[in-house]
Image (cartoon, rainbow, N blue to C red; front, side, top):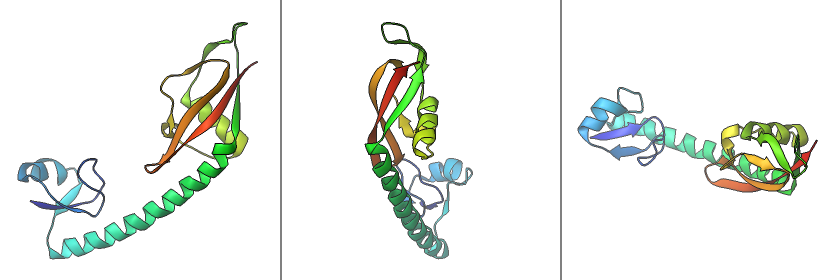
Length: 148
């Protein structure tokens, strides 16, 4: 069955794409959940307009993410935390604290889900975290944790 996607679905396609899927997948999942609709001539024309709008929005979002990258790559974000004499923190620095520090020191607003922090920071020192504000843009940010 040919379906026009209303939302991007990982492994299937982006918004506005016309894809061929199994009948059951379309009838039981995609169409009832509002992720797509059966394709016909009128719907496919509408899908082309959706696809063009998605491409423009994606390009604009990517440019904005690259501007954020220019600001944050050169910045060193400092976070103050309580620590022992050996440099181990009493607790840890989480994604939310990194986002708050970035916003306070650079004025850039990020979502905590954009920060790739494999595990919480538990020691004083300089750490590098990866930020991915867009699917095609990712960059490192230097975090300096200091004892307070």
